[in-house]
Amino acid sequence: MTTVVGAAVASALALTTIGALGAFSATITQNGTLTAGSIVLKEVGSSNTCYSAGVASGAIVGTNSYSCITIDTFGAPTGQLPGGTANTQTLTFTNVGSSNAGTFTVTPATCTAAGSGTFYGSDTAGFCGKVDVTIGNGAAVCYYPSQGSACPALSSTYTLASLSSAVTIGAGLAAGASDTVVVSTKLDTSATNADMGLQATQGFTFTLNQ
Image 1: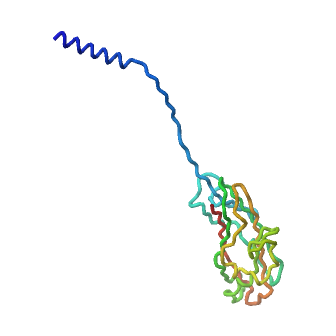
Image 2: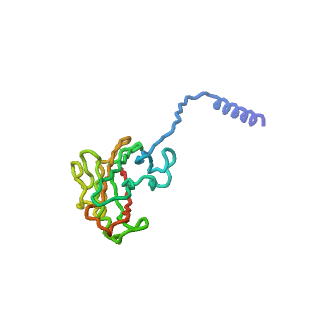
């Protein structure tokens, strides 16, 4: 019995001694991070500003697609007369995100016309074809009609009725870059009494893509 107890004590002492021995070690603890870039479109027109994110900063509202009702693409001119003075609306777009956008386009919806005010004509089906339009950058490039020079004079050749497909605006926007879009409209000289009091409405979607 004495021998067994002695052996047990010796074993316990040996284990205790081994556990108390020193050992080398080295440890590094760190994080791994990956941050997605962002493409956010800011529009300034007249005295109003809109963001595709729905907010000027912070969490994006919805899907980074915002319906801006405070800026009118045409500047909302009223009282227009056949062959009158051209109206211009200057819009400034900026990519306020952190990544470059490869393409910048504007896609028009179908133009519609309806009576406005107390008196109006019956040419609702043809009125969009009586509104002349060009879209350019206000300098040397015209986006609609597409050409590498200043936009031509407003005429019945290019109207809201013929503006029916996507238009490329420049070559995209780098992060922090801006582009100016000038939209010019005028009631064509061919407008008649049937066009009096009518109002043309056309939606436009400006899109930045990677």
